[in-house]
Image (cartoon, rainbow, N blue to C red; front, top):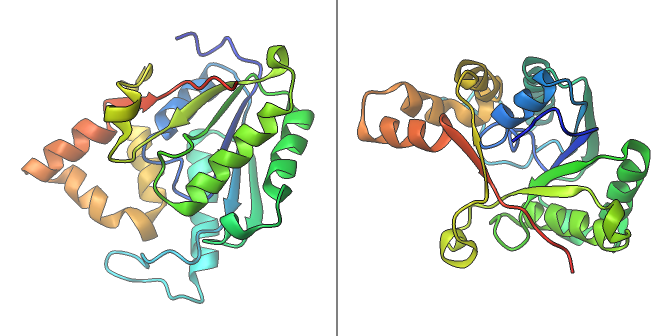
Length: 224
């Protein structure tokens, strides 16, 4: 995959840390290839259950904590265009019809991205993930086919392999694992247990390293 063969990559996720696990190595490869990357994070994730491991945030402080975490993550990745859009966490599915779509359309019009990275509709588990995926697809449906950005989508529902098969975009992140660990560590309120597993000489550690630190997997998506 030629990482320099893009004019702009738009990454759209609903929560701080959504970029860290399966996408940050890929983002850094785009950045290092000289491709402008915009990361649009729709919420602050401040209704999340995790308050640290062990807990150090409170329900009242989590907004500020997670804002700082995603800012640190962007700095590590080299992303200079981080957009924190401030929608309410865990309520994206209830936003006024067309509102999220309009936000995506505005960014596409401004940035003219050649590629969009987001979740795969129907295979991303969380309602906020699904609402984000649907908004991106809806925005692209109204564009002429020859003007649409390519889609590079994350899917991790338990039905993914049975329904979608093996991912058709597989990114080798060799050489990026140390920086990826730093990105994940930036989201310390959310990733403490996973970081502990990654560092452990256990079966869980081996599984975590295999899943997160060798390849990042995506699916392409054709809009009818």
